[in-house]
Amino acid sequence: MKKTLSIIMTVLLCISIFTGCGNEQSSAVSTDGSTSMEKVIGSLGEAFQNDTGISFTYNPTGSGSGIKAVSEGRCDIGLSSRELKAEEKESGLSGTILAYDGIAIIVNPENPVNDLSLDTIAKIYKGEITNWAEVGGNDAQIVLIGREAGSGTRDGFESITDTEDACKYRQELTSTGDVITTVSQNPDAIGYASVASIKDTVKTLTVDGVSPTEETIKDGSYVVQRPFVLVTKSDADLSDAAFRFFTYITSSEANEIISAAGVVPAN
Amino acid sequence: MKKNQLMEKVIHGIFLVLGLITVGCVLLITIYLVISGIPAIREIGLVDFLFGKQWASTATEPKYGILPFILTSIYGTAGAIVIGVPVGFMTAVYLSKMASPKVKSVIQSAVSLLAGIPSVVYGLVGMLVLVPGIRKIFNVPDGASLLAAIIVLAIMILPSIIKMSITALDAVPKEYEDASLALGATPIETYFRVSVPAAKSGIAAAVVLGVGRAIGEAMAVMMVAGNVPNMPDSLFQSVRFLTTAVSSEMAYSSGLQRQALFSIALVLFMFIMLTGATLNFFLKRERE
Image (tube, rainbow over all chains, first blue to last red; front, side, top):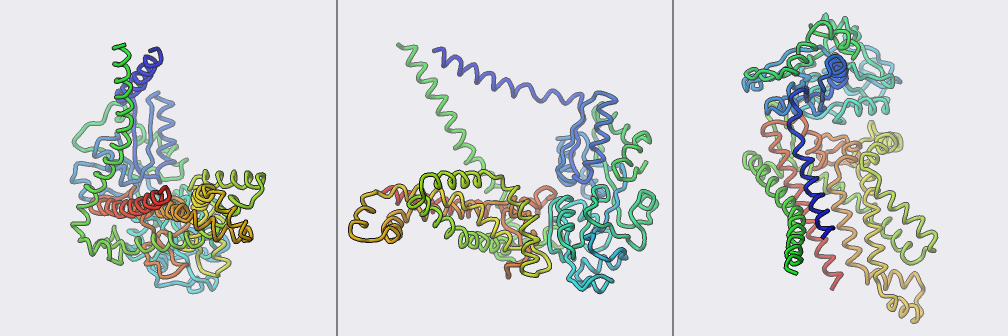
């Protein structure tokens, strides 16, 4: 008897755990989207949380998922590392550019090549140039490393270099970290990744003689770059907390934090 | 007394509900997969979908042919079986019949440990050791390939094959072996002529279990196979499996692309159901 009673009590207790959720949204900001924006949105969220005490969550799922999440109302602000498509804008979403991110072209440190033109990069990725010797490197086949279809970085890279649907990848990897690791492991590899996440294990190339720095990305002289976009619903108002977060991160006060995260503030 | 009976019934009901949860989950997943997998197949056309050789889901003129994924999954699994089964089977014979208890306990705990390693760790080690290794040994431009995936899968299916085979071999009645030995056969002859044939349906079940594990693996394979939707014409080709086709594009997909991913999942589900049914068949035969 006692045993059954305790079992019933436990079951009740378990059920009561689930009822607790759901109401805590009121004083919290939830963001969802681009994995490339993790660093910048993470540090902004942390600063915001310290200043206001409003709790902040970030769900790194990818630009597409983030846009979907905000349109389905599963988060306050969606994060996209590409411009919104026309069909997405038509479905009632609007985008605000938070910052610009340069996409770095990376090779293995052992590779003697230091500079490529945008045109050459496009030719390499389209498979028209296949040997490093043709661009002043060693006599070795070029190994093309890229991201999976649908990735914001891939979309950004291919639209900037005008190589959509034409890239002859040797490997399609699903994260920036995997691209960097793979390029650092293979002396003949070339890859692309967000400037903010580049590590010393790979060498960043200059493009048309310009290296990706804050100035060159902001003034547009470094051409391989893309926007970081905050996605909101255009017909519905943000919650109080989300509105405060939105104004905070788009104000000039946040610029220092955005720069510290390795991207160039837009406002 | 009546109160007790009532209590019995209540408890009985609770257990029934708990049991039904599992059944419900299976049904839910099956129904969901079928419902969300059918529309894309209809739109693309079953033949174009299953036998199309090109996959370009985000292109301006998208192509949704999954033959490269199906073939890669079949080749990859077959390769893993070709390498994994002989090694696993011999290990099982050794552990079950020849090893001293001490050696047996050491090797068995190593096997259990191997079974417990998360697949992402297999993938990481594969990415950092195996892939560069293949590049150097075979002198190819890049090591991420079907071969790398086969090797990783072969290691991953070893524990299931070894454990299942040991169980089957241990279950062979000792009288069979004694009789064989008494007739003058050597121990090795006895193991391979008597014990193994007696345990053959259990061993077949072990192989099917290995197939199931290999065909369903995604994470480790994604990190070493290169993930480009090529037809698997060579061992050194960068390839994409059915599992990785779903997982690598799911995060950013939309529209027909997303529906097509569900259709791939449905195809994969069919494959796994098929291996499951085969497994049941062998297990039943062993029991009889």
